[in-house]
Amino acid sequence: SILLEAGLDLTRHKSFNASIHVESHRTGSRTLHVVSDVYPTGGHSRVLTKWIQRDLGSSHGIVLTRQAAPVPDFLAKIWADRKTIIKALNPGDSVAIRARQLKAISSNFDRVILHHHPDDAVPLVAFAKSNGCPVAMFNHAHFWFCLGSSTSDMIINTMSYFQNLTIRHRFPKKTALLKGPLGLEPLGREEVDKKSAKKHLGLPENQPVAMTIAQESYFKPMDGYDFFKTAEKLLDRLPDIHLVVVGVSTESHLVPETLKRNARLHLAGPVANPKPYYQAADICLESFPMSSLGAFVESVAYGEAFPVPVYGPGENVLRTSMDMIAKHLVRAKNEDEYLGQLCEQVQSLDSIREKAREMRRLIIAEDEAFGDQFNSLYQRIDGLQHTAVKIPETGCCRGDDNYLLASFTDPDIGRELDRLLPFTPAIIGNIQAGLRGYQSKRLCFGRVRQRCLRSFRKFMMRPF
Image (cartoon, rainbow, N blue to C red; front, side):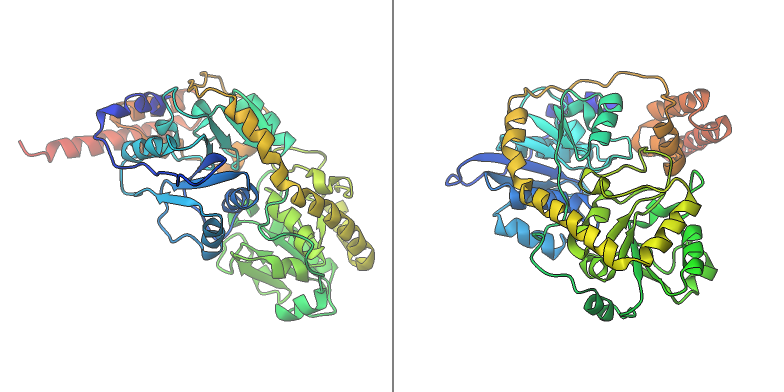
């Protein structure tokens, strides 16, 4: 709400030469994508790029609000092939400067799609005024609170479960679904030769290979789940199986030292192109406690690796079934059943491979239809009038999903308030956080003391 109010008076800042002009020979509608920054790994960069790649009925522009590293070549090539207009804002400029530039750029487009990170304030400030083209937010950070709901006319989700969470907790004006696998390469163009793929990665050709893939933080133990303790039990029960972990490096503190010394565990670290690992794996284990949903589906789509979902009695925000593969899978109720299920699957690799092929055919069909969704989506977005509305003040919601997410992210609220807010709002926010139980009173009041001391020192050091 503070940022929303700040965005209402952008006119007090100096004007900037920030506009981007779409070439006059272009026809059709114009879509501006706003992204904080893009990486060689992860899902959000690929969704943004696949959107541009498959939406042939619209011309596209991209604004990068804080890109520091070079854009990965494979993304830049697709953007260039589609003649995408790109503007990288200076991450060293203030939020107000970048927000004003973004607002000016958006005047050349028919609609704005936000792919920003949860903590990026630039889009919220830029679109705080209720004027200009409609703004939709693509909800790629399903698991976190995200700045942007108040300035978005529609929130787009990838799964029904997260759409329901959006309706309950993000106060959307409208919602929509965008379905399909994330992979950029067209699916189904090549046969999968697992023996050759294993040989290429230096894995035994005639031994079973399981893999998992996610960013390291997704494996952080919580709620009784510890992936690497379960992995130790798996390697003990199946003396021939090799386990490849993509996204976690050998330096990770999450992996026990005894497990690191096991020659059948392979920590591959972050990988820009995981397709060779998908093709080498007979089985793909869903990462847990948090699932890398897009990668789990990609393992089937690119490698015909049989997907094994995390065990558990039901669904929640961290364990959500994907429609494309759910009907073929049975989720184990507990760890023992999960390990037993894996042992059975390793004994019948030919059978599960055939099931994976059937899933792959369904995923390919969805992938081929991915680009067909945009016309109807744009019609809905373009029919909206851009309005920015404060989200209502609410009490603490004590649902199971909220407890899980709070346990997983372990935020230092006081530090974030200190980082984002000026002196008085930061002090008030810290006091409220302590009184309302969001963090311990000792921690929050310690933060207030530190902030006061820093401000006092700055005051005393001023020239008089």
